[in-house]
Structure formats: structure tokens, C-alpha cells
Amino acid sequence: MTSVSRLAGLLLMLVGTVTALHKPFARNNRTIYHFHIHKCGGTSFCRDAVANNETVPADYRHTNCNWRGDEPASLRPLGGKYNENFDCDGRLAAMGNVTYFQTENVFNQRMLECPDRLLIGIQMRHPIKRIISHISFEIRVHSTTAAKARAETFSPRPSSDTRYGSATVNNYYIRSLLGSAVYGAPLGKITRAHLEAAKRVLDQFVIFILEHAEWREEMLACYYGWHAKAVADGGGTHMLNSHGKSSAWAEENIDDEWRAKLEELNALDLELFRYAGGLSAQQLGACRDAKNAR
Picture 1: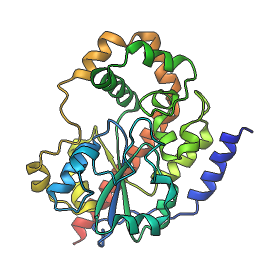
Picture 2: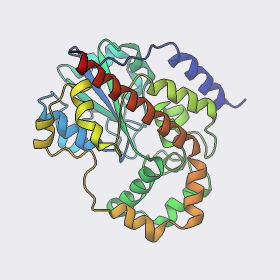
Picture 3: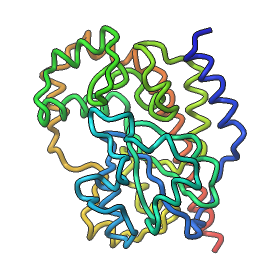
Picture 4: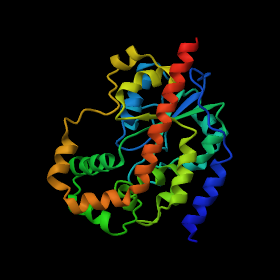
């Protein structure tokens, strides 16, 4: 058994001891921690938080509601300097009067230990679409090349720069949910044990699915306590309109061999995404049942 597999087993035992919470209309003044997966609408969630009068970290327009030190700058430690160094008490003390914040890249499982004080959410999208959007974004914004991204798909390329490397093309969701030790695993080393551990983490989250825009207003009102009018007035799309740029880019640049390899490398993330969709549907159903019972 590899060290990465042993770690997955330990993580599974850890998160398996936490009871999943699905309580509609029960925010109870908890701070919202929205775990921001890159290219899954985190910018829009941050804007919606502001539109709903949440107290967010300073300079939120440039940090996507990340706290100081949590921003995932490309050459800093994963998820910023502070993300994995906190327990619940330390995190909440550092946040002061902030009522909504985000972190990006890796999740700290210790944040699951205080469900009475932190309400944790996430938005996900189809894994292959997320990867294509990420690659297209890096080419447009940071002048990387399609050849570099393609090479990362076919050979191990660990990187401390979170814009690149094996993690970006190989089960990014699972790696991100299980922390930096798993995030940095070599290409192709994510196992079913990691998948099961990631499911147990997701069990504790409020889950939004980008492709199910029709669920969003109900879910935001039910779990975050946000009002649809404020969300609409704030311009929150939960995926800024790229006018199909990433899809058009994929048609021109992702050949059949590359796409097939991406699907192979992300088979476990695809399973996790289907699982997340089921959980999100259950949470929506609980909201509707609770609303009808009022």
C-alpha cells in the first residue's frame, strides 16, 4: 500500500465520524464557508454574498472573498499560507466579524468539526467541462500553451504552481477535497479509497450544481438565507458568461486522443460528480418538503 493510499484510508476514517447535516432553513447565524473550486462560479457566489449584505473579506473584488493569506496565488502554498494551518477556533477568530468567506484549491477537513458554527458549501460542474474551462482560461489570461496542458495529461508533472501540473487534469475534485497531501499525488495515483473519502467530505456540504441553474434560487434561499432579488440585482450568474469561448476552444484544440485520456484520468471525479448531483437533489427535496410543511 502506498503512502497516498494509506492517507486516503485515514481520511476516510476521519470524515466518517462526522454526521452529515441536511437542515433546510436553519443557518442559525453560522458563518458561510464556500469552498471555491476553480472555474465553478466562485466569483459569482462572492458577488451574491455582497448583494445579500454578508460581511466579506476586504478587497473581495480582487480576492474572490478569500481572507488574507488564503488567496491561491500561483507560487504560494496550496490554498494560501493559512488555509490548512487552522482549526475551527483559529479560523473563526481570524475571520472576526466576517459572515461569508471562500478558500480555493484545497479543503481543510478540520473545518468539518464545527457544524454548529460553520455552514460549508460548494458548487461543482461536469469535471471535463471544468478542466477545459481551466485550460482555456490559462491560455487566454496567462499565455500558456495548449501543448503544455496536453503534456500534463500524458505524463506526471507535479507543480507548486496551482495553474499547472497533474492535479489540474487528474481528479481535481477529489484531490482538492482531501487536502494538499492528496492534491500533490502523482498522475494516475488517485484510488477508489480517495473517492470514498471525498464522498464523506461532500456529505457535509451544501452542494450546488452549476448545470442545474433552475435549482439555485431555492437552494440559496433555503441554506444560505439569500434572497433571489438580491442575487438577480447583484448580477450573480454563478458562471460568468464566456459566450461559449471554452467550448469553441475545445472544438478547435482538444483532439479525440486528448479527450479520451481526460475522461480516463477523471473517471473517479465523474463518479464523484454524479454522487454530488444526487446529494444536491436530495437537499433540494428537503427544502421543498420543509417549505410545504411550514
